[in-house]
Every structure is written in C-alpha cells, then in structure tokens.
Image 1 (cartoon, helix red, strand yellow):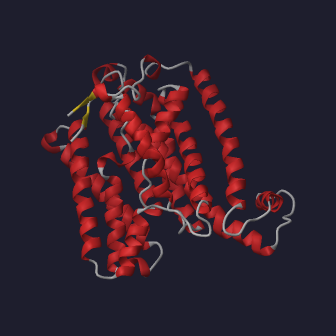
Image 2 (cartoon, helix red, strand yellow; image 1 turned 120 degrees about the vertical axis):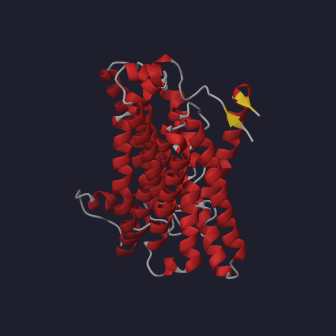
Image 3 (tube, rainbow, N blue to C red; image 1 turned 90 degrees about the vertical axis):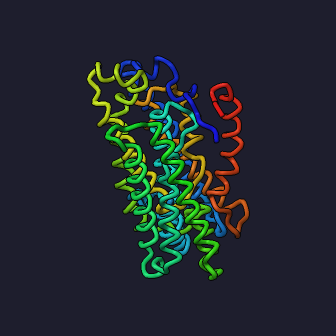
Length: 365
C-alpha cells in the first residue's frame, strides 16, 4: 500500500497562507469566474443542441433566451421539449455534480496537504455506492425514482459517520487515522457491493447496479436538480466562507490557533461539508472518478494555493469539466451513450500516474 506523506501542491508555499489583499482575491476570483462562466455558457448551448437528435444552434439559443424571458423561441415544439425537459436538467445536474466534486477535492487536498487526495478518500463514495446497490438489489428503486438517491445519500452519511467515529477513538481526532479508516471502510463497503453483484442471480438487476456504479447523468430530472442544488450550493458557500482559515491550517495547527482559528471546528466543518456535498453528488450521478483529483490540481497550477481563490474556481471548473465530459459521453458513440464515469476515468488515470511520477520522491512504501 502506498501512504502519501506530504505533497507539493496542496500547501504550495507562503502564498496559500497569508494570501494577497482581499481586493486582489476578489479580482482574481472575478477574472477566473468570468472566463469559466463564459466557457460554461458556450458549453450549455452546445450541450443543449447536440445529441441523438441534433437541434440547430439558432433554435437552441432562441429557446434558451426564451426560457429566461428574452425574445421568442424559433424552435419546434419537439425541439423545445427536448431542450427544456431532457437536456437542461442533465446539464444543470452535471454542472452541480462537477462543482461538488471539484470543491470537495480542493478541500481534501488542502486538509491532507496532498495534491493526490480526492473526495472519495474517506469512503463517502463507497458508502453511496453501497446504499444505491442496496436500493437496486432490494427493489426499492422501483417503488420511487427518489429511493435510489435517498439510499445512496444515506449510505454516504453512514460511511462518513463510521470514519469519523474511527478517527475520534480515544477522545482525540487524528487526520492520519481518518485517512486510513477511510481506506478501510471504503474497501469493506466495496467488498459488500461486489458481493451483492456476484450473489444477485437477476441479470437485469446486475446490469442496473453496474450501470449505476459506472456513473452517469442519464436519469437527471428537474426534481433531481431541485434536491441536489440546495445541498451542494450551501456546502460550497460554507467552504468558501472558511477558506481563509484553511489557508492558516496549512501553516500548522498550533500557529493557526495562535492566529485565532478554531482548528477543530474549522477542520470538522470542512470535512463534513466536503463529505455531504460529495454524498449528494454521488447520490444522483453514481461514482464519477478523478474529477475531484484533476480539477483542483489544475486550478492550483494556474491560480496558486490560496484557497479563497482555489475553492470557488475549482467549483466552477469542476462543473465545466464534467459538463464537457458528459456532452462528449453523449455524442462520442451516438446514438449509444458512453458512461461519463468511464470517460473521466480514462482521462483521470493517466493524469494520476503523472502525479505519482512527479511526486515519487514524496511517497513511502
């Protein structure tokens, strides 16, 4: 097993601790948000237009403008229905899930001071998968479309609680125990998931489980967006609000306390926030690999390690990245569809190998 000790990207030097003046932070966040926002708008138009049934760009743009109260749509009723009822919910959910994974990855990499940490590092994704598998295997997912994400979210919460309990054993919280406990709990839950697949003799159920684990946005509905959005947006705002304290934690807990940071509260708030928004993302999308690893690392290379800038831009970049990946997954094998979780893994695995090679002197076996 590889145990990561330190890392070169999460702390990133003194700029991530003291940071530039607040006016400069706002300027950097605003500039990055402007670029990412413009790119996202372009991708929303493209994603709304392309698919098994292509819609002219002019009809797509006029429909999108009409939906926000500007002008009248030139699209046919069928085209408008496809955009409004099928593609837009998927676009919004993809952006929300990508944002959740991006900002969660930034939080985890900061807390563990390692650029190879990701949202699934403490077993939350595995818990969500186990919950979803339980819903499918028991037939609960056929009772209501909301039961599957509900079971997945409960599974994520139970996994998070178990890991926190392990890390707090003896009355003293340990980040290293949290990490190792997360690996153990994730492996245990992964074994349960695999056993469920193997022991299920219903091929249709097996296929549904494997299909969900591969990750995708094909089940997106406006109802999914309405449920996931408040959790993810609230969590992201909380993380950005305490980003300055996360910067100070990188110096060391004693130094942070001397500067007035309530270390235990800040650390636990960030861990719970990252876990909850990851759980919400996994509940509606399945397991989407490597987004939380790649996005914060790339954003850090561009804007530096100041989490006041890094976290909000990681959220926007994560949303954009997953929207691009999901759009590509829909069209690359059209009319068939490639699971977006498979596509992000194909992109992320080589990038992870690059990180391992780049950080090989910081790894102990």
